[in-house]
Length: 142
Image 1 (cartoon, rainbow, N blue to C red):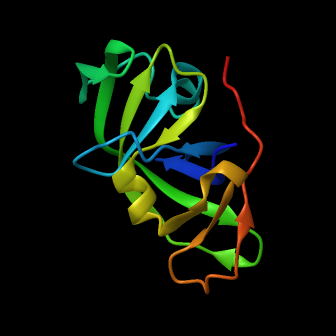
Image 2: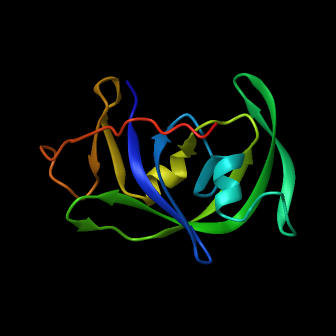
């Protein structure tokens, strides 16, 4: 099991709601959300336009060619009965990804505390320890 949370991605009128994998092993200097090409199309970020730079990320599986758009979207966690705040994020577009991933800095900015990853439990950092939430089901963008 892993931790997935329901998020909303917003860019200039375009909006996508999906589950996202909280990947603490995805280290970044800034809050980043890695998205598949289909999500990028929905947010009018694909095909790449001015301001989206090609890059290569070193991953456990080897080099990965991606496209990066700095501060391109706002992201918030969607949960019942709580209106969370948006966080500005860099977008990383991967032609190999089939689900949305949150980087370590993004997880922190969204105030997500990973409580028991093996069981898929999480909470917000400002919630009491006993306020455990369950992981969302995956949403694959193929």
